[in-house]
Amino acid sequence: MGLVFSEASDIIRDSMTKLRTILEHADPSSSKPCHSNKCGYSYDSIHFDTYNRFAERVVIYFILLVSRPLIDICCQGDESPDNVHPHFLYRDGNGHSNHNQRATYLAKAIKDNPEQFQSITDILEGICKIVCDILQKHLPDAFDQLRVFCEILPLNHMPATYPFPGFVLNIRVCTDAHVDANDNTICVVIPFGTYEGGELVLYEAGLVLEIREGDILIFPSHRFTHFNLHFTGVRGSIVMHSDKEVKSWNVNRNGWDRHMVVKNNYT
Image (tube, rainbow, N blue to C red; front, side):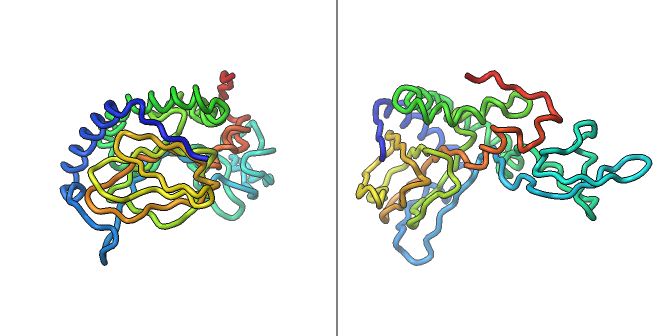
C-alpha cells in the first residue's frame, strides 16, 4: 500500500538544505514561495535516469559487408548473426540506424549538466544509502527485483540511487491525478521545502498522506492513482524509480547478449 519512514529525518533535512542551495544558485526562482492553485502556476521536473526505453523491436537488417549485403530478420537482437558487430547492422532500406537504441543510455539532463548532476548525487549519497537499507530490511523482494538492472549495466556503471537506476527532481511540484504505468514495482518519494498543504493522495487506497521534509514514502506508483493537494510555499521532491522496460535488458540485453561480454554475478 504505502510505507512512510521518518527514522533518518535529521540526515535528510541536512541534505535537502544543501540541495536547495544548489537549486537556488542555478535558478533563483526555485526558492520563491508560490501557490499551486493560482492561475499560471507550473512546476519543473528534471529526469536524472538511466533508461532502456525505445530499444529496437522486430526489424529487418542489412549486414554491411565488403562484398554484398545479407538480410536477416531480428527481434531486438535475437537471432542476429553473432559474427558481425552490431554497429554494422542496419535496418532494411535505412543506412542510418540508431545504434544507441540497442543499449541503455543516460537521460539528457545528465549529459547536458554533468557537474550539476554530480553535485546533486553527492548530496543524496547518504539518503540513497538509507533508502537502500530500508528496502533491504522491509521490502527485500522489491529490492532484489530492482537491483538486477543496476548490477548489469555497461562498463560496470553503478547508479548513485542504487537499487534504483535514477531519480526525478521536482521543483514547485503539485501533480494532477495520474498512474505511472511505465514504472517498475515501487517508487520512493522524498519531499523537501517549507510549505503548507501539498498532501499526497493515494486514491485507491483511500489515503491522504501529510508527508514533510525528512520523511520517506514508498508505494507502488504503477498501481495507485496519486496526486498532490494544493500547497503554498516552497515545495519540491526527489522521486526514485525504475522503468519497466529494464526487464528486456535484464533478460538478454535487448537480444544483443551474444554480441557482448555479459556480467551475471548477481544472486
